Image 1 (cartoon, rainbow, N blue to C red):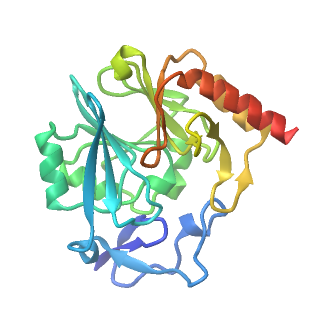
Image 2: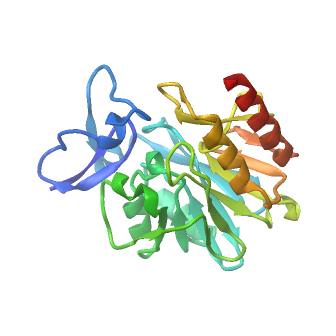
Amino acid sequence: MEHYVCTTCGSQFEQSNQVPESCPICEDERQYVPASGQQWTTLEKLQGSYRNTFQKKEDGLYGIGTTPTVGIGQRALLIQTAAGNVLWDCLTFLDEATVDIIKALGGLEAIAISHPHYYTTMVEWSKAFGDIPIYLHAADQEWVMRPDKRIHFWEGDTYPLLDDLTLIRVGGHFEGGTVLHWPSGADSKGVLLSGDILQVVADRKHLSFMYSYPNQIPLSALKVQQIADRLDGYSYDCIYGAFWNRNILQDAESAVERSVQRYIAALE
């Protein structure tokens, strides 16, 4: 019996004695099945060929990414707070070295994930740190490929986490698409951890908003305005996106406003 992992999106499935027939996450039009067909691996098979690397982004914030890339290639972020540490988004690959480093940084008290493409091996991460809770928005519950008692589905548009952290459902890419607000970050100027719900683009001065990134399906103007409206009232100077070096390190609120206006104008 194995917990098989989709090599394209990195999602881990319920235990089975044979590979799944398909990956519903990849068959959805927001993701894709490669031309070569669906392929599978396990977390055990990845051991020894991959490693996780850490980068300190600012005081209290560390990025974690896998080399070489597994699945989509996102990085996770570890936020240190007085009430304990939170892992924002998740990675497929996990090994003892990663667990040891994170424990040296204070361990983890909770995991929160922006959307289903980054659910990956979240249950394995929870177990490695003492069965900590995993917070997902209830609107995306159908995309959980490995149901587990450690998963907590929250509802509504906001949810308070440890210390001063707040999960904000802005929708967009997925109905339950979530960002995390950290008001103590950036020397108390505020930080937004956006995943790719708000995608920091190459110029690192703007963001984009897509229904499907690999298949290049845009969001409607209505959905993009909804994202902006749900962020109204939250202060932040920095945005840390889903991938290494995709950050906006100052005046991020203005960048969101400019980007929303630019996006809607392009649609019109």
